[in-house]
Image (cartoon, rainbow, N blue to C red; front, top):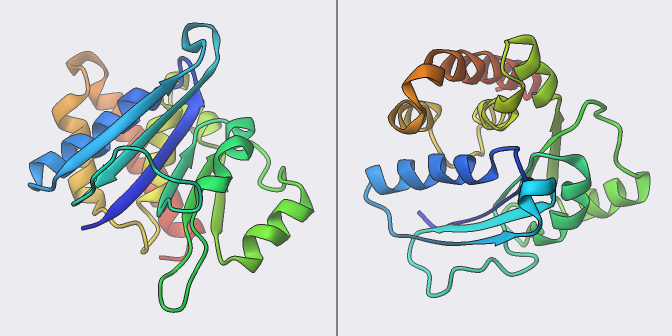
Length: 194
């Protein structure tokens, strides 16, 4: 497995917890792993970005235009990080991006055209809304990951991701967290046609 990922959001959205989920899954499977975190004023809602590489890599930072998978837990952070998504070249597909936003049409048409020209897939999902209706607004990160697991190109099995969540989620939140993951997985399978 050779996967480069970017996970972005603002302080309090669980960017680091989402990163731990993928890191735990990779380590359980025996894959090499390196990464880096960039914190802005995370305690005050500032930008938080993590770079994560699963496989044999020499440096932790994902270069712009190199990310296989991108998660944006906040739509403005999507604008800041979409340049990390790789474009399709020959048989190598473009980056796969998942964005938490209430409006699937929020993105400027010119940016949509730019991404489409490069075969970069962007899927918008109201993860925050789903998490809130299930009683845990702070679990939008889990909802977005669950939704993404419904896509056939995501290089991680939903079972392995679910096991990683079970491993690291605090006991008092585990039941709700797993319900949110399962519900958003079903939504992802339905909406992404997998």
